[in-house]
Length: 415
Image 1 (tube, rainbow, N blue to C red):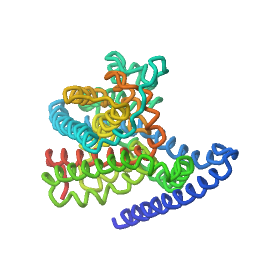
Image 2 (image 1 turned 180 degrees about the horizontal axis):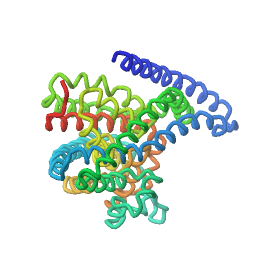
Image 3 (image 1 turned 135 degrees about the vertical axis):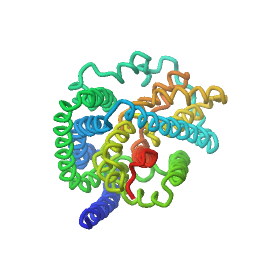
Image 4 (image 1 turned 90 degrees about the horizontal axis):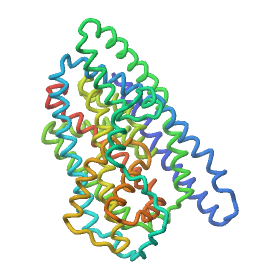
């Protein structure tokens, strides 16, 4: 039993070392590029970016089949639709409360810090091409939820569509009784095979982290932190406040065990932080929550839903970034407008994949809805990778505490 935690601790240490080495090498390369502007920066950095891309592709390769197999087994093992509905209802109550807190916190802090107030940007011409012309319509939103083909959804890693199909498949499998047991046993075996693959893939995480950090720092430089210090500082302060709120809420249910939960999820959170992708942490998070004591059936049900409905870090960013852009153009949004924005984002934020920069798509649609110049998205592009790191890590924490609390409510949290 002791070898697994030791191995996990070693991997965490290697990831931290890789992050530090990546920052150092990235800074050296950035300094070199500044002194030699004609050097082909992209070609030099391409091998480093490829390291991260290969790792993310390997992770994406297993996420959809892992979500399908674990969620179907999780639903089918509940035994009946009533159990699924009970756990699903408790899960959605937590998700909706968490969504509101995250969005409201982002709105409150951006109004408090006013990071865009001093920019005084001129309003762009009406003829300026926009990045948000394809704002989500109701038809787009609905078609994004319900798949026309499970194979197409898996091929495109549309996690929400996979979740919808898996819920139907799991309920139908449970309703078959004895015949369904064959399917459940088969998919249970499949999920364990994929989790074994996860262990192999995670060995490449430090290499991917090194490549990702090197590429980001080499392109952006450490100077970008100073230029946007107020925005970045305010946003990360908000993430720490959100972390404190989530941990306190979790402590109310599981008391001192919240510290044990943090120890178990530190490695998935680090992976998400350093690769800019909460999706990259999903397979490892599934394993660590079960090691913490969460029941496999509940984890298999709640965690995939969380990756579609409970991206706490991304949701806080959406209100923070949208109102920041309005501030940058000197636009005053009254309280009613901001509350309307919050409610719109409560809906449009659901189902976004936990992959890099998906939040920008939702922000673009929000800007178009509220007549905020979508050209302001350009203000965020340079620092978005830095912000995405914090968003991804917070998404992992948010889904971890949600799973632990639902397990406690269900009496499915081992001592």
